[in-house]
Image (cartoon, one colour):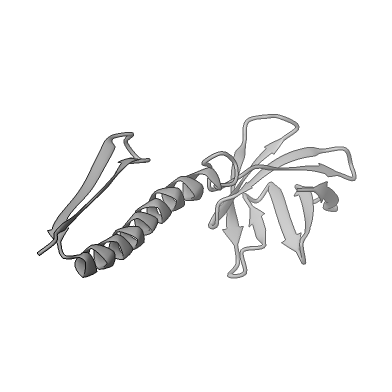
Length: 142
């Protein structure tokens, strides 16, 4: 009776902590089992590579270099420069490069953010900025 030896292995680097992972499969059996093993090892190897590449691509594809809330820059018709970060329940707004101010969301639609003195409004993708009782100024950018 003839035996074939099937030995396969791979080395992977864990993306979250950089540790090396070594995976090795050994099998001694008849030729039919060797063929089945090689096919299964191929599936395991492809699966492992897909998992590691998915981990890398998910972290590398984050907008804003790992920041889930990127800053968008706008210039308003009155010359005001805004750096806006939408945070869901509030917006963080820096006016003319000053320290950012948090404006809570007003209403259920989440398109108006205001602290009573400063108001950021987004309607159909158009942003406007108002201070106090002044007429809001349209802003472009993003």
